[in-house]
Image (tube, rainbow, N blue to C red):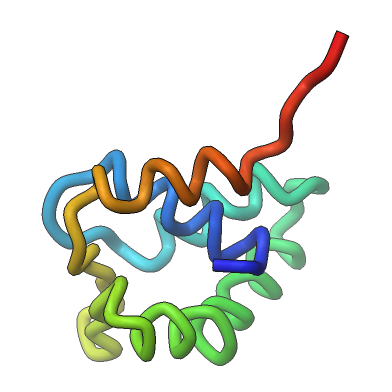
Length: 93
């Protein structure tokens, strides 16, 4: 969970019941990552599949079905809220 893209992926997954299309997760991460271009979306999608999803699946947080390209959160969302809150940027006055 130390990576910002993994955090964004988990933030999306905790708000969606059941399985979610990988493309939807990649789109959400792209929106939160900066420039919203097709190239950036493709880079994020590739990074999710080859880098971030293996970490999340190894940690037993997410199940990934590569055939259907769908993700399922394996833990109760409430368990992740404190970690995601700590990871989110804070604003100060």
